[in-house]
Image: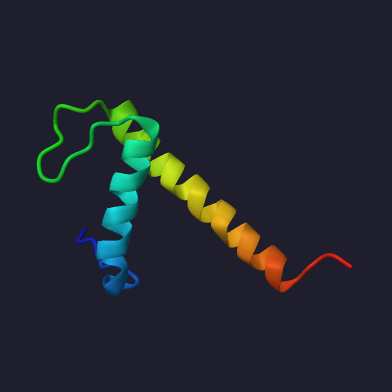
Length: 70
């Protein structure tokens, strides 16, 4: 079965790549551009997981500032 894996917002690719490297640096994963086959799946997974955590936190802050509790 063919998979359609297009990005929802292709223009965001560069920003997400930059974010990925910032997160990797922040948590001490030696991620570099190009081949990263020397990293463990745990290291790579921690980068993705932490990216999701930070995006959720940012969205929660944005939502809270738009709808302050009364």
